[in-house]
Image (cartoon, rainbow, N blue to C red; front, side, top):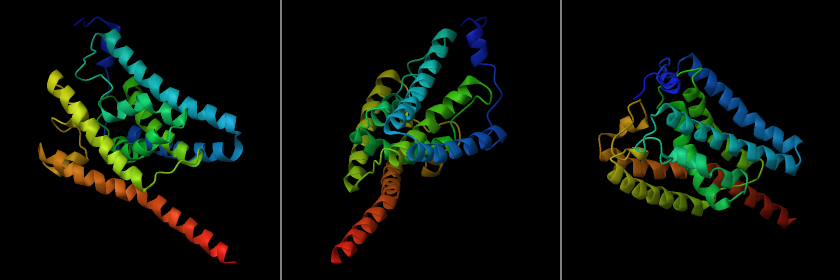
Length: 251
């Protein structure tokens, strides 16, 4: 390793990230404001063409941030296929998010809705992160995670996409297919994508689920519970709309 490489020095020169420290709290507040007000603004004030352009921009910003992080690792000579392939679920979502915000694919939306709000949102609140503000790694992490939340909220508010009751099982099946596939990659590469071999070093929800492999088994049940809870707002709204339609038909 060439320690004189300026990119290597940059990657390894950073302030330690503090969970719920000042920079973390500020970025959480900013993320909340953006995720609430940008979709509402686009829905109310923008034409369909502009709405689509904003959606594309969200997706491309997320993808470019991931590409930038990979290029930085390559330039620093620290790229490692055991760490930097887009096989963590959030980073995999970074690659396919354009299917939702640009191509408006419902098949990807109904899976990514549950992936993002059951996983990515939690990863934003309790980041597995070393770099603090103003390091590129800090911005990359929150763009990659908050950007996914924003994209799904945007699809719901602006595009009118909604998961249905079948989406729960599709997402659950997709998650397990992904878990099985990534476990095979981990076996070949001796890696830990999707945390199938060990929990993240930073504090996370997995810490409450016991040691390996029990946190995976318990995580299956918890994941399904989260998916059901995440669908409830749409189940109630559908029931309400149905009730209103039926009451109007009487008159």
